Length: 107
Image (tube, rainbow, N blue to C red; front, top):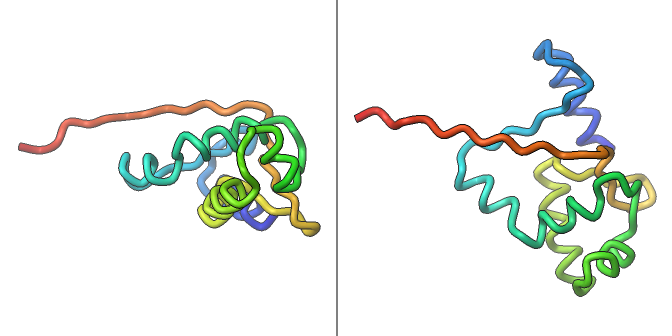
């Protein structure tokens, strides 16, 4: 759970409430590239589920194991999903709130 530990440390350093972990994308394009519909489905299935193996996760979302593995690895690499010592995937939250902010570009 190195990703979760890093997020907790970053939260503590920032002065934000530790009860509200946050993940920020650099741009809307980065967010869209990372959070594809298939990956959103994985996050939804992992929310509140506890650690799951790739095969079980694939079964729950009705997708092939290889595709789920590829998408899960992308979510692990960016730090949104953690991998336990025994190789299971973990998203240790019971709910997700998504907030978008768009700002006018300077003319």
